[in-house]
Amino acid sequence: MQPAITIIIATYNRAHFIVEMLNAISKQTFKSWECIIIDDGGTDNTETVISSLLKDDSRFKYFKRTNKYKKGLCGSRNYGLDIARGDYIIFFDDDDLVHPKNLEIAHQVIIDNDTDFCHYQKQSFVSEKPKAIDLEVEVKGNISVTNIEVVVTGEIGLASCTVLWKKECFKTIRFNEDLQYAEEWECYLNIISNGFKGVIIGNILYYNRKHKNSNTGEFWNDNPRRIESYVKSRKLVCENLIALNLMNRELKKYFIHNAYTLKAKTIVSKLLEQSFLNKVYFWMFPLKFKLFKMLKQF
Image (tube, rainbow, N blue to C red):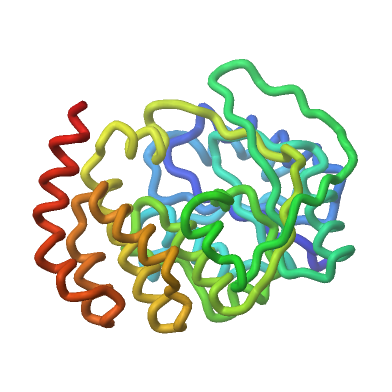
């Protein structure tokens, strides 16, 4: 039977973590799902350690990323999107855990509110597994193009694994395979800026594991590849907002401040090209940035 929800998990050398996540998925109270596991060219024994799960539950499906897609999280997820059969899409990470009612609650919220996606909350952990708390659904607000600023600025953090989407949200949109960090921020803003709307709930339905080898851990440890991708994602979002006439005063201020922090003159240049900023900013930017670096030391 065709599943209602497709879960997509990109994995790379996480044999020591992935079984815990797959076991958590198998305990979902919502049963109509398929879980597509895309191996991004790992060299460990991931396929071996999950072989019994693949055999015992046909809803789990294992694939190796083909050369049609670039190596990395984005290419693996895009592969999953192209072969997904469900009417809804959700992305989980191979090193995390998930609430047993994740799919049930998020799916029902979308139906009850006639919306395109449901954003729920997550809780971080290091070693001790969080205890799943079962509470009534708490609707906190809405997300759409009319308040896209809250997602751009991070006031509302749409993490890669905290959203259940209708599949049609990805009909013409995919992850940018040149990005190695902040790829979900760029992709999800692309979806919202194209008119899709969602509901925010306050329930914690996902548990992300903190460790130094995660993408986020590498970013905060100043990994050059992650930093470069972070800057590039900002530039792409800036360009998209400009093209769709969604760049307002508050967003301009956000990107300028962001550019100072990231040492990213290309973002300011992009705004200047579109005459969103007075030309004086072009001359003031280097001076302000030097002053910012001096003050940052204190």
